[in-house]
Each structure stands twice: as structure tokens, then as C-alpha cells.
Image 1 (cartoon, one colour):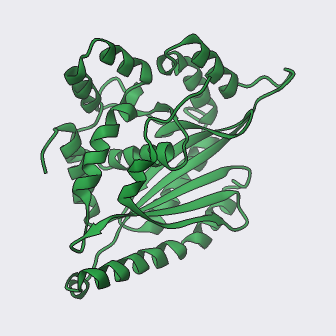
Image 2 (image 1 turned 180 degrees about the vertical axis):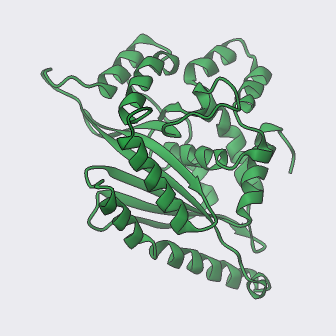
Length: 304
């Protein structure tokens, strides 16, 4: 039985793929996607349009979506999905969680099993644990359960450090830790699996049995979305479109490449060599304003 991604590769057409590389001396990968630039600005309106098409799959389970669609209750489905988000005025993190979901589904081709958002009873709940859990088939009968962590700070070093700090805490704390989360997935599986075959398949991967003839191998991995802010100087904003394009892309690339040693250091510091990390680094202009604006436009269905 196959669990399928809900987002195809057309989502990636919005971005310049600047870096996709292994991080030396680790089992981890670094990805830098830069949003398309027009007239010396990021094309946020195009990003919002794409995110509108995907936020329902992010915030609700497959089974809930299927139930609404079966009765053609599309308006109610939109409202139900939007109600899961916190008010955009105080919403600092959910834009990053949504973007990480989109990259994991479209770029890594790792379908969602569960997101924090869908199990919140109300938009004001604060759920501990990972932001989302995805499943990646590495090879036949070999899977990774990927736990997502999104951090958005002005400074890229801070975003990366805070993400690794959260992951370390998630692994080592006595309650709401990674093992509790795997138990939670197990109890929530019936919500994602809309048929018995899919349910049995997910169960066999999440808690694999070692004593069967052809055992399934499952390892835990982490995905990090590290958002940060870039501030083009006034003289850069006045550059021709082509010069701005080249200048800003080079700046961002240098900034991100300069963090590879820091990532290696964090993996070392927290003894995380046994885990695979998928890092998605994402630059924003006007970070605070933009992340709230994205949620506002999606959840209130505001026109550009």
C-alpha cells in the first residue's frame, strides 16, 4: 500500500534552487531555495496562491478531507482548515511549518503522516513535539520517519541553533519526547488511513517487527526549516533588475554556505551523528511582516 504526497513538483517552480548538497562528515543534506524575484522583490503573491492550494492538506487529516469532499462540502472544508491556524496578528511560526510541509512533500517526496496543526483542538492550543511527521521510503522496506522543526528568526545562525536545541530537547526530555510522539502517531493513524490496507502498512512501518521473515527497517530523521531575514541596502534596491538579482542571490548563497560549519558543530554538540537531517534554508525580506501576511491572506482568503 502506498502513501502518496499531496503536492507535486510544480510547487518547486516558484524557487531558484541554489544549493542542494551533502553536509561533510554528516549524513545530512542542505537545501537553499530562493523565492522567485521580480522588480527587485520576492514574488510573495505567487507563493501565497500556491500555499492556498496546499494548506488544507497541511492542517487536516486525509480522512477528514475525504469526509468533507465526499459530501461536496468544500466551503466548510476551507473554513475548518483555516480555523486550525492561530490569528495572523500573533502567528509567528505557522508560515514556516506550512512551507516545510510543502518542501518535504514536493522536494523530498516524503508524504505527511501527521502535523501538529491537525491534532490541535483549537487554534490557541500549543502542542509540544515536532511540527509535522513525514514518511520517506529510502529503499525497499527501508524507511525514515521524519520529524519536522521550523524556526524563523532574523538571524540564520539563531534559526539553526534554536532548531537543533529543540530537537535535542525533543530527544532527551522525559515527557512529550520522540518516543511519546511515535506512540501518538500510532494512536492517530486511523485518522490518516482511510482504508484498512493503508492503516496496516503505516502501523508496520512506524513500529516495525524485527522477527518477521522480511523485516522493515525504520530510522528516525529530522527536517529543519530555517527562515531568516535579508535586508537589501538602499543602493542595492536601486540596482537594475539583473544586477539586483545577481547581487542578492550571491549574498544569500554566501550567507548559507558560511553556516555549514555551524551545522556540523551542532550535530557534534548534541551527539546527533546517528540521525539524518534535511535542512531547508529560506530567506525572507521583512520577515515579521511577511510571515503574518502569508497566514492572513491564506486563512482570510484575502486578495492580493
